[in-house]
Length: 135
Figure 1: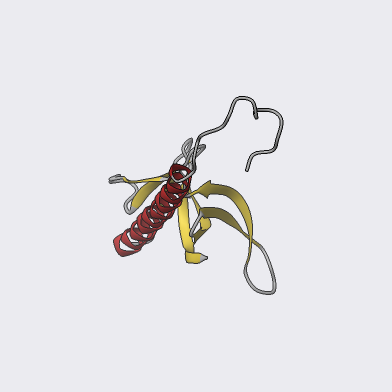
Figure 2: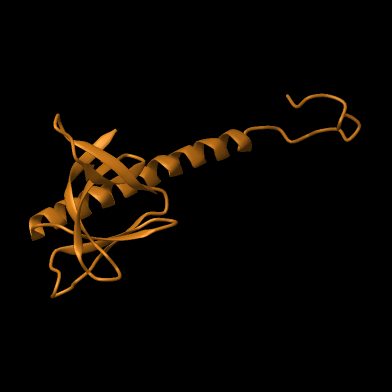
């Protein structure tokens, strides 16, 4: 499910230049894309996928580069810059609520699985082990 999409600037770590990028936020991942030249419509190449599971958002305060924040995933951290403070706040809010909803869904799923296992009897005769498939 697509939650939010939009243009953003990516700050390069080495030379602090800003490159135009495009983000697509889904309920389970963030796609970090580069625009691809096209005569018909907008096209993008996916550069990085950042899973929502384990994602963290950090608001950064950089006087040289205003409206910046970091998106950290399990494998990668992106430093991003928006065109305005309002745009930055909207992205942070959308990302954080997506993370919260993802964690809530996973917690509900884990609780349902745990409850299912709690209700199962564990009595197994050692004589039966290895002789039949589990029930």
